[in-house]
Amino acid sequence: MTKRRKTIGGNWKMNLNRKDSIALAEKLVGETDMQSLDLCIYPALPYLDTVAGVLAEAGSSIKLGAQNFHGKSNGSFTGEISLEMLRDIDCQTVLVGHSERRHKLGESDVLVNQKLRAALDTGFDTTLCIGETLKQREADQTNAVNTAQLCYGLAGVTSDQLRQVTLAYEPVWAIGTGESATPEDAASAHAAIRRYMEFAYGKAAAAAIRIQYGGSVKPDNAAEFFAQTDIDGALVGGASLEAEDFLRIIQLAK
Ligand code: PEP
Image (cartoon, rainbow, N blue to C red; front, side, top):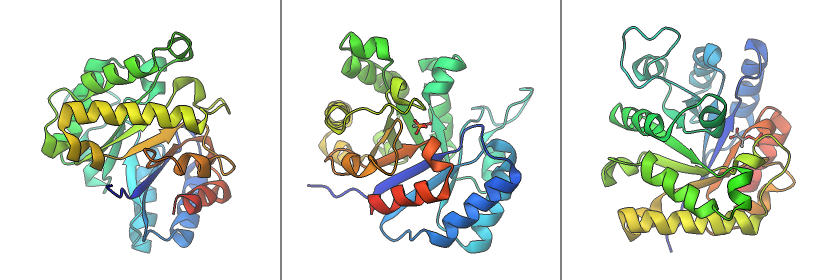
């Protein structure tokens, strides 16, 4: 059986000011032992460069991630930020397809795919988020929705490029709601995702790809998720804003 290294993401979303972002990053670099897992933080865009400085000064191997970007390298795209700009400030990884961008900001599967491919072509590690809404879940469409989002999202992505990809299964109804999937439900969705990846990319690639669970992961439920065979870590929103909670979750993933 392939042993996959756990991977934890802290998605700070549109939270924390400059001072709080620095303070949280400093606590994480001071107290996180990165021997046995990968950790990435996604600060709000205005503070990415500042947090990059904190990580660099500490020589930390915590990765810096961007929550959003534009797929074009430059040009007339008012308000947007390119992957080249992100690389210039030592950002190594990006999120694509987060449900808040799909459902609150109208990002389509086609756009998600364009952004994912642009990120991979530019050499970024990329986390592709997928997941069903409550209505879809109640209609028993969880696996169908995940498969469709994988199929669209990964269109044109080669087996080589897949090595840069992490998947995050995040049921929309569980994000920021305090309500999480049961570990068994999450495990079943993850197993179906891995089966699809085997169909699309073969056994070895499916066994190697890491699939995070996201949706109200907290210190008191994280261990149960991490104990599931196909769950390789977590993408954490709310609980990544408090050093104590986030560090506890990181600890449980080891
Ligand atoms: C997320 O933003 O990806 C997320 C999972 O948020 P939360 O942990 O707050 O549900």
